[in-house]
Amino acid sequence: MIGTEAVILKGEETMIVMGVAGIALAHALVLGAGIVDLGLVLVQKASVLVDLIWRHHRKLWFLNFLLFQPQFPGTTIPGMFPNMLPMGVGQFNPLVIQPQAMTQQATRHARRVYVGGLPPTANEQSVAIYFNQVMAAIGGNTAGPGDAVLNVYINHDKKFAFVEMRSVEEASNAMALDGILFEGAPVKVRRPTDYNPSLAAALGPSQPSPNLNLAAVGLTPGSAGGLEGPDRIFVGGLPYYFTEAQVRELLESFGPLRGFDLVKDRETGNSKGYAFCVYQDLNVTDIACAALNGIKMGDKTLTVRRANQGAAQPRPEQESILLQAQQQVQLQKLVYQVGALPTRVVCLTQVVSADELKDDEEYEDIMEDMRLEAGKYGNLVKVVIPRPDPSGQPVAGVGKVFLEYADVDGATKAKTAMHGRKFGGNPVVAVFYPENKFASEEYDG
Image 1 (cartoon, rainbow, N blue to C red):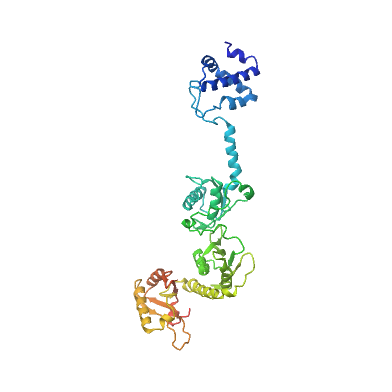
Image 2 (image 1 turned 90 degrees about the vertical axis):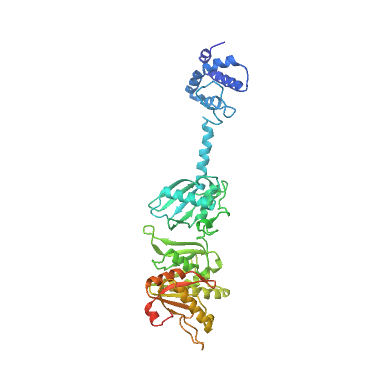
């Protein structure tokens, strides 16, 4: 039998043939063929063959495609390379790894999410942890167990981040988180500028799943992108000291909100005096604009209109709703203007109706019930419930209840406990009332 050195030295062509023969032999041995003697000779010279093939760089595909790609997963020729672990299909084959990297890069634009309006305290770790938790809470982890976020990049100067998700579908689910509170600040969740809708359509869902449990994180289903479109309302002229909760409460006098954004200064976090909102019931859009526009709030006057066009007038069938809403706005003004500074007097509204106060016996029952309830929170000095005049003359304060306490502490406890409680299906509004007006029996404030 001719030695392999002699055969290899005859030239490059012979070497290639010998390499092919060696691989054919290896396959034969795996399949159980019995050419053992020739196999042992070639195995002894395997290192020489590999070395020569490696030097001839033009023939590297033999090393990748022939020598190192077994036909059966997890198999090697027993004893051929004692220190080598069994190989699976694709090991040592860069052609298998390369498509995965290319796929990741091709889908990256559809897997990234823009998050704007981050507070100054945000960092990569806190953003990643937060979005991982939120995605799990709403059921948005459709790619399986584990974290949805792969990577986070933050621009601290401009207060935004790019959050890279592990799948296209999870990135689309994240779009439903627009307006969610991160460390107390509502953040904008958008597609990045390099997002290509036409290409993304072939990669996976482009809209959030309708089965997401958004209520678990305090969001309303359907609020994604809620601050866009023709029914978006601009609310300007807000006093700077108004909190987000106060503005929300004012706007929700007309119904639940689909989307809300109180615009704040990026550096200080303070309100810039204007906001945007969209109502769940789009039919109340013009009603809210008509009722709120021109309202005085402290030293400010509200400007409320559709953000994308001039304000429209409510239709005739909406007039009764408008009147009711305007009355509710007046109550909210009372909350934010009169009731700002603590006093010893608390004013309750939406507790009693004028009809309930006409009957003497019913009036006394209401007075007694109010004394018992209000007395739980402090030393109650006086209860005043104005009654309608039998002659029909207007009387200031009808429908209100005034509670005077011995100190501010008792009044504060009563206001906190009673505000928002339901009475006759209506939420009670409790505010502090000026002591001088109460002493003068001025109940029209």
